[in-house]
Length: 303
Image (cartoon, rainbow, N blue to C red; front, side, top):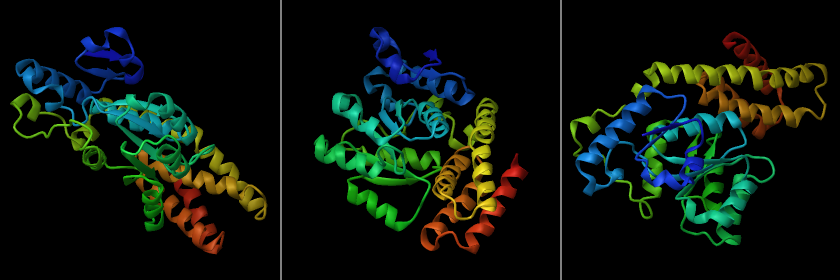
């Protein structure tokens, strides 16, 4: 079992990586260590079944994760790597397309945010399907919105499924396994030995002290990086309701909806989603302005 501060994808490119049974990304959580050790112990006892039969639900699955939020990327990478997936991250759709153009065989599945700068998830997916001709690789849409129109647009663009951020860990794992079932050998988890049966669940992960320390650092970054930008844009709303900053504020609301949920501020995330949806449908009306004030107060209270 190897412990590294690097991405698992970076380590896997090393010549000696095929000698490693499991990789854990620092900082180490009790759940990640428990999963890795249980997985290897069972594999050593019954190697004929292969590593993927034991332990982590996504052991060895190579995931390309595209999201323009660095905070979202890091939280999602920790969650997926905790299940022993091999994760590579990029910051927009164009980067995902460029990477797949040269390294398509290095990935089993793509998790694609919808709203990104440079190239959005819909455009990137169409490019992957039509320009690159990659038809069989599963692409799952990730978005803070949950409108049925967005879901249909995702399917029309060539995506295989749709996950609303912040995702429930077990739900995401189930979707990844389901859409990738034809191309991946991700074994079911029935009939394992006692050590594998003891693998930590998503609920136990939430109670893991080390994981809570990691999440606390993510929450601090959320308030340091995202909240000041929102406050500045919201102040501009109060001073100049017709300014060009409106699109900037709307974009920040979208970011808040996704990132707040990822770091555990569910009420703030839900409120930001409602604001975004109402703004899209009705414009910057009195209801949206009132909700923006409520969001500002909620952020001040949480901080």
